[in-house]
Length: 315
Image (cartoon, rainbow, N blue to C red; front, side, top):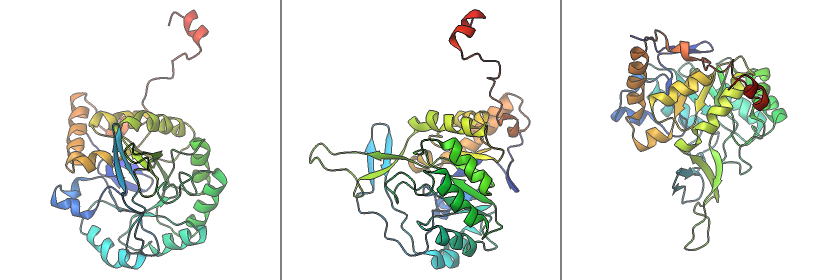
């Protein structure tokens, strides 16, 4: 039977499947066994209680869902006192996602969340529903570097950084995060989107813009993971459009060490454990002993992409 375990820095996951932040809670345990997941990822927490964005917060499209939740929550004190203990009942490592629009506060939050039952800090520097430019600190490499440097100085926990697909050059952003001390990269957050109702000519979401989640986005994020993996040495968690085991395989071949799943779990809460089972079967059928054999194993080194050169060798 295949060994599905993977390492993200110093953290070992029993398999490469984890939920994406914002699309999951410990209450999923009523439906699936959370101890089967690679990691548990809590919804992004902010310092003060937040009501979230105006309603409506979700709109369907032909290709997926646009959501603009706006990071509602009861604040860091409630989170540490009440939410962290809920997750601590389970075995997989707990990843705590954090967000702020202020670098000093971002770093202070990371420090305050560095409590024993928290295994990883995920710096969500890319929330498109809180900042309508598409992602607060993840749109520019200098902002990314400054923010991650400040956070790194305040916590010794493993630090994962969630990047934005809305940045023009995500490779430069990824390299800045790595240079500033990130231990892993989550690629990527949602795509800044807009839907307009044709019955009243008004935006469908109360916040106007939202983040698109959809299986249709997988090829775009896969390309980002592939390009970033060529330029950084730290592990990557691919997030975007995973609905089946073969999607996990694609992300790992592109260079990801694990994947995050949001949309599929939203539509079917049992999807995450089904994908784990299917990934195990997929590997066993092909005689793959360790799922880590797939990481970066895409076979493209001999491909000729120059049209004339390719023609000259008969491709």
